[in-house]
Length: 159
View 1 (spheres, rainbow, N blue to C red):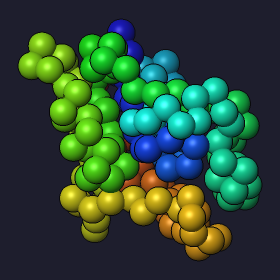
View 2: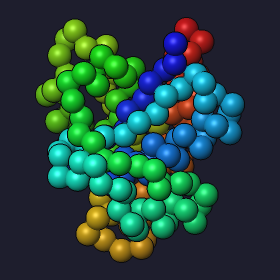
View 3: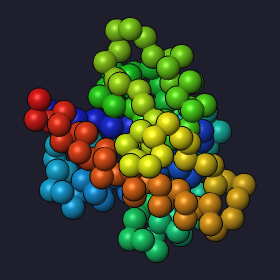
View 4: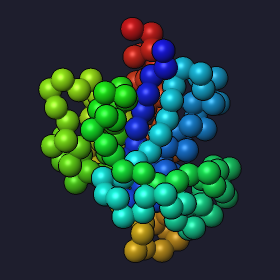
């Protein structure tokens, strides 16, 4: 059975699909594609069914990360039993997810940057109303957190 990870931001068109696909690339490079399932979702349904933001697609593509197939969806209660780890991209999302999670749910809920070597407890800033540098920062933070996250999942897989 695969270890399942869900990345969550607000509308599921910028941060969470970017972080999910960056992590998917790290998982593939590690040869763990069959052992780890990766998805993303939003806390709100503003963009259900839409593609990722065009700027996210463009900046990710420059780094070899493909967001073209992404379609936005909203977090649902069933996600808390379907996934092992749900990663919020900021503390507002974390609060929202913790409010949705029930005691009987198995999913652990954490911040993505808890796996970053220098940014534990911090937010991945929303690039939506920003410029190029903001989209680059999402990629930088996601890439830097991916190694720590992968190490965490490896431990879970070996348990």
